[in-house]
Image (tube, rainbow, N blue to C red; front, side, top):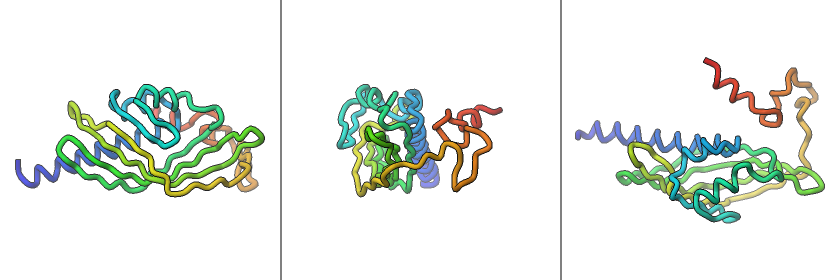
Amino acid sequence: MTDSDDGLQALLDERGIRKCIEGLARGEDRRDAAMISAAYWPDSVTDYGVFKGDFAAYLAWVVPGSPAIPCTQHVLGQSFIQLEGGTAKVETQVISYHRVDFGTAHHDTVVGGRYLDVLEKRGGKWAIASRTMLYDWYHDFGVANDFSAGVMGLPFSAEYFSGRAHGDFSETFFARG
């Protein structure tokens, strides 16, 4: 194999790793078991500090998700990827929004942190073998605004504009041919 072949393979591997991490974030925000399962090896382990367990326990924790957290959004930043053959160590910056039901009111909260993932390539596919979440900061913005009818004083022309609160229009968008 030539240096250019090695470089091309590294680019392809890095793309596969990023697609895995991006697909997981999308799956978690939708509590989609199939998307989440595609990102993890069945023998993986996860440690979020507030949850630690094997993949089966993690999936049961995330899907259907806590009714106390009706909405999440994970925004991924840069990933630092260290390839080591069929294994990669990856640090990915994340800012995650969570609407949390505290019993008396919903609060808008945001966490900033990093995922430390070990991914393995098996049968040509990259997936997570282990994940640890590091928390860099957390902010509770207090009682959440009800934006289901519109934003900034302007009404929505259809319910689906309020994101996952009324189904997820992006599912319909991507299903179009």
